[in-house]
Image (cartoon, rainbow, N blue to C red; front, side, top):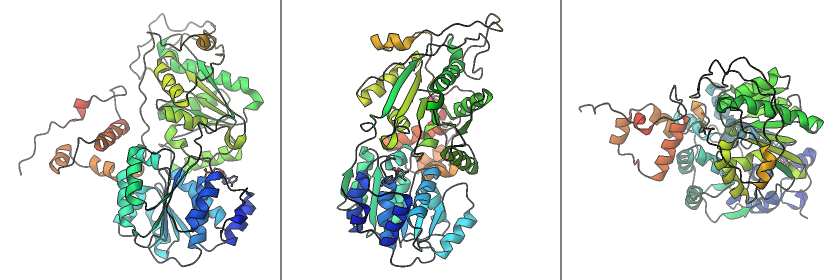
Length: 507
Ligand code: AMP
């Protein structure tokens, strides 16, 4: 078996690896590092948890070992889709480069431009950034990208989801074509394939097992819940969640609880806290310092339950999570794989519970066809049913009638888990599917095109000849529509409301 010492890494890097306690490279490291050290472009198809960060950081540090940074001209560039992922790469860099004199700067939203400018002015070897923030610095004339020798694009499929691909293309075109490129993505969507064909040359393609196939150590259970009333679904799901956590007892050393909507992340965290659980939320609306503090607490064990949205938790490296609870069934089946992949890592045992109401049937079906097997049905815990106000009066659900109020009676919830192992999971007529809102990201983390479009009138855009009918712009429009806050319209803004009725101004 290959050892790190067999790879031609800088001895200072080898020392840092050994101090970090690693001896054997992971498959992506063993395959990527030798090619990277020979100066080749690398296309890695791998997810978080495979050791991919070190697979580009270690050769990068080795290759940059010689030479010095020049003012405002970083020698290498790492692009990550979110602040947390960028910060995580920066932490990795600090660990592996600690015996070298290489310098780095982290360009992410939520940090003042002034501080970041100072670092760049002095000259850095490695610049780690989110695409929007990087282009902001570039356009302010504070940064030159023509000294970039190595460029890394991490989590490209997430960049695609978040609408960052035009930014990435622009950044590629601002760096010298002689640069070496490391490009990582968990999947190869056609758009990603196109970019790699355009910007990588003679790349060595390395594919490591998807987490979906490596997840034998994760015990999955679907907990079916038919709410006593459709407007009590949210409340009853919270009660089921508490029972599931309690039932796990000591075995649940720490857990991530995923919600589809960021506003639910807050409510679920608050509710858990009020019931005596040690829980905190993480989502894109929280201040960067709060997000970092919460994550640190979760990593060091002082926080037991992390309630998260997909975007906030994506790709975060939290090594030992014993449990994942899907408070909501994810509406994108790949998110299920990502979510449950937070547990059972590195050969450890993990448990993933998913609470599903009958309205989730469609999404459960999609997940099961993606993972190519049914999710085993678990026993639904009994909860106390309180007949009170609806759990979300602000939604389009009905207000409580006088009959609904005040009364309290215990009633076990029907065990659909056992039923479901014999019968297909079927929706009932009474429960209405509520389409989730995609998480809104802080403005500076959104793609630049999206940001500049926001500040331009619509008719202006169509006059400027932008193509609106291709699937990319449609995707972006959909993303924008999903990101836009909707007030008083339920979860969907009808398409016609997004059109401008203003007459074209006379020129
Ligand atoms: P990543 O996929 O880069 O997010 O890494 C996942 C986790 O694996 C991180 O906690 C790394 O510190 C850890 N890791 C990276 N390389 C190795 C290795 N060779 N052996 C054991 N753990 C590693």
